[in-house]
Length: 236
Ligand SMILES: [Zn+2]
Image (cartoon, rainbow, N blue to C red; front, side, top):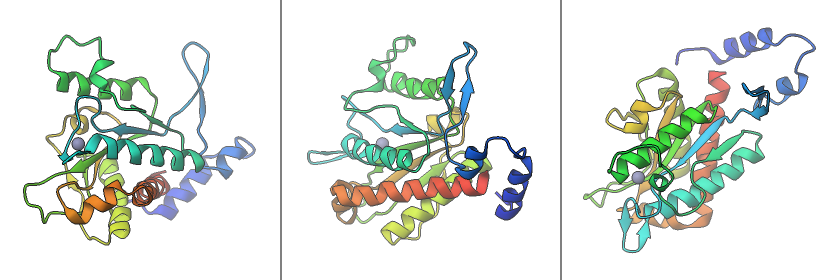
């Protein structure tokens, strides 16, 4: 949290052996290829994009407007932006289905529990640096609006949340602070630095137009990607 970026940069440069991996030094966000225990070369994923809800779980709604569809639309845009910038990313759902349907290893009868466990399980199976979970907020109070990023207790997660919140505040002309999201299962159980990004309120007239407009969804995705890049620049 309190590390000085230039000190980081100098330290990082000193750690790169001269003559080795010039491509990685020139392109710091290039995915690193590592050997698996089976001897296969697997690309290291940097970001897991957790696409909130899906299938019978629509998430928050307003009329026939469903959170799960907004999450997926922004996730696809974020995925494309990150990949174009050389940041290896994966999405844990690429169309409209519930992750609980993929979970055949847990005996729990709770679909919600199975869904969350499946999301966590994927973070253990995919070698990744961080997880960004995309969601849309809703409140009884229709005047509530704006982005909110929730983070874990760790400094890395808080830093990631501050970077994404700052980028979303600039995009949406707001000035909200990120918050620790202690009760959230994903934030409690996922090991890598993780944040939940509530992109705006579906209950707010101000936010609804933005959340459902493809051009504005692109702006949201670009802001989240910018936050991730800034985090990587400071944290590396
Ligand atoms: Zn949600």
